[in-house]
Amino acid sequence: MSEAMIPLNVAVLTISDTRDFNSDRSGALLAERLTEAGHRLAERRIVIDDVYRIRAVVSEWIADPEVQVILTTGGTGFTGRDSTPEAVSVLLDKRIEGFGEQFRQLSWQEVGSSTIQSRCLGGLANATVIFCLPGSSGACRTAWDGLLAEQLDSRHKPCNFANLVIPERGQHV
View (tube, rainbow, N blue to C red):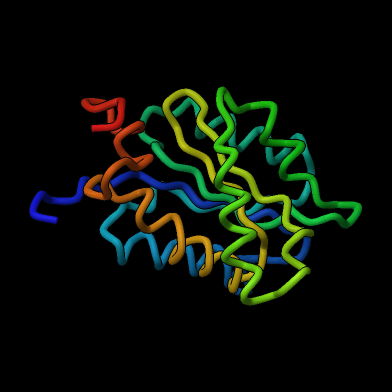
């Protein structure tokens, strides 16, 4: 990779009824991983697992031209309060179908059949790429290391999502 990586502005949203910034290991891990990779942390927030509060924050970031990537963690399971997919899916212009499939394939080696309970998803909205991850730090690590690090790197070939959200590119190059 001879060309320089183009850093992206990434917002991180933790969805949890119990976490705060001191106990949010998943949001902290994502913020650490993305900055270590050379990206910029645009903003980091925590909201309770409520469809409308999640949707409000994600909508705000989708509308912000400075935010190119949104990573959410939490609320993707099957308990009564898990509502991230319902909150976010209606905001997407296009779904990244392969993201959830590939994440579950990677996750199988760590958690076995429990991976089928992950309703993680990815998509594009208003030139912003969005990935909704499970709430465990292990799942966030698996997603970042196995998929997101490459797909958010503008140098990754043959294609990547970075080149879709970089304004001067706006397409795969």
